[in-house]
Image (cartoon, rainbow, N blue to C red):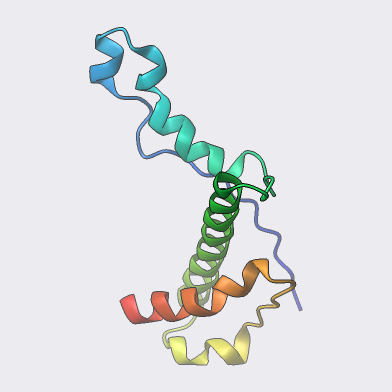
Length: 112
């Protein structure tokens, strides 16, 4: 059996907003990039306030979804039928954080 350790980093879909940059608003120009990439910079934020709880949930979803998509992509690279996935792949859900994997796998299956 083989175990995979996946290391994910959130990347913004754009580096900066050229309009804001041209206007001299340099901080606003990179705000979206920083906001997107903060998702994976610090794990397990303080969850005693709303922003920390929201960030933690977004992180949990991000890591679960990225991992499941990678598992399915790798599986389909070697197999033609997704229905054989349970015979070849085991996903262990430790603790409550990866519990989102169950509905996310259903969502991915429905959309494909």
